[in-house]
Image 1 (cartoon, rainbow, N blue to C red):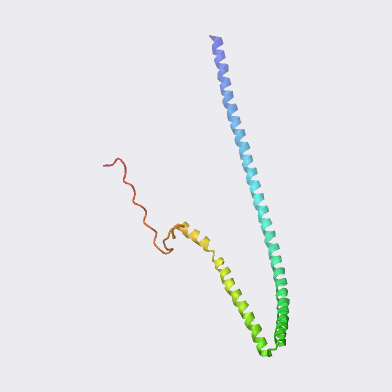
Image 2: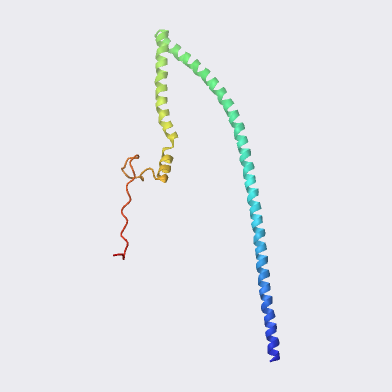
Length: 173
């Protein structure tokens, strides 16, 4: 019996060691997890900082490019306008050479330019309609519940239809 008692004491000590070993393993795992969390946060901060620096550099480059682009665009517009005026003078001289008086030659060329300008304005208005972002506005209105769903024939300003009546509860007399 004394041997059994000594055996039991030895097993109880082993059980206590296992509990301490498990606690030490959990503590070590928690330390590793905490270190990994810190490393992840540090990496996320570094990534965000690098992205912020990259965006700042891109905006600086875009600002510089926009200024230079506007300057070169202004020069191109000036030279293009000058060339257009010279071509108009040649066109008026050509119409005059066909036998029309100078006033009539200028009037014919001016009317031709006005017709082309009118066509350009008509086409431009069609393109400018796309700037209203109508599809996006429709989707946002649908998200807010102000317009009917696509495919219905209800007008956009009509009140939404009432929901169908709820089914009666089952098993209640």
